[in-house]
Length: 98
Ligand SMILES: [Zn+2]
Ligand SMILES: [Zn+2]
View (cartoon, helix red, strand yellow):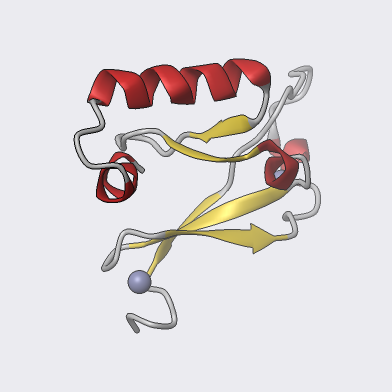
């Protein structure tokens, strides 16, 4: 995201970009997508409000939205545990890279 922003706005400082992203997250316009061990990515909250998951391509490193959700996924928690949320990330190679 920073790279893309830099291309369109030469000389844009990193601090400005992070401040802007933080403001958008605080406003609720952007929603962080957290993948373990990777820098934070963001998506529009309107898109995130529609429950979905992600696929990360090992080759191009792009992250794609996946529609739908495995049924009964929250039932795999041990008995007596209360599930607040879940995250499903598929890893592999996208159609373009395959
Ligand atoms: Zn790919
Ligand atoms: Zn789900």
